[in-house]
Image (tube, rainbow, N blue to C red; front, top):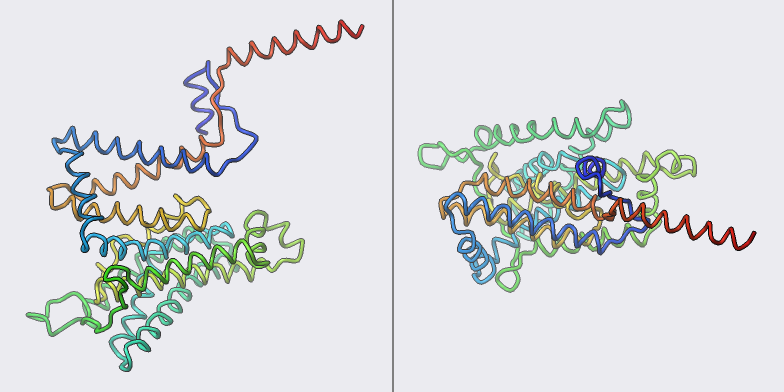
Length: 379
């Protein structure tokens, strides 16, 4: 669509598809798209009377030169990386798991259930919380998987509809069933605080981030070095051919969806234990949806989840910093949408080259003349 639109607007130029695909070229176009999005945002801030360079300086200084900034940035990156790889795993089978936000909440619910009602060594309880979160997220993702396979219902629709159900369930649990009645007036809309924390290394790097990085590396190895990874990729490329060759497509679809839900549930547990310590409807700041964005930006490259996850964490963290400067959260949402739009366009344009139609016709005429001369020589 983009090439056709460009050719219609500029008839003397044509976007011609390249015969070769270059991953490096794709990365360059994406980076240029991000820079363009930042420049457009800076221009909008300037027109609104805000100094973009000064704001950028505050953002960079707070995020990278202070212990608080670095710690918060890495904590934000953890659920984004986990949800990004969860979305990427599903997309290998051409499944679009848009229910990451709901699976995150369900995973956090299972984790807080264990944290509030079980006692024992902290390490054991945290491990049980993680396992419960992964099991709950996987079971919640099983619903759209079953509906896709048994009834042919698109997982896009079912996962989207299951998101608000999980969030409202969180509201019911936090505001009623397990509400913290010890708060002043008993008016808290959250559960009591869980007394567990994931360990931190070097005073800044949390265990959740290390687990997320290890998971990304394992997923990369599985999809590039194992027969099962090949089966999943082949099944996503052509389900009909994969079935004909005897690959267990249906089983792989179930496994992929369960893994995706489990990782999203685990992200809810890390957010609960590392950040909020309480279960409520405000547990996630659209971390599931932002994880979808991370996967889109990574473009199928598993290892690219890591830098894009940190970058999106920086974008989210910038919202907190900019709010102190009197700038609304909507600016961050607009920037996120702009980045996605421009990087998507850049990814398409990376597969095309710009050709001047007049020069193309001139070269074609020269080639025809050369061929005519060669024919005359032969005769």
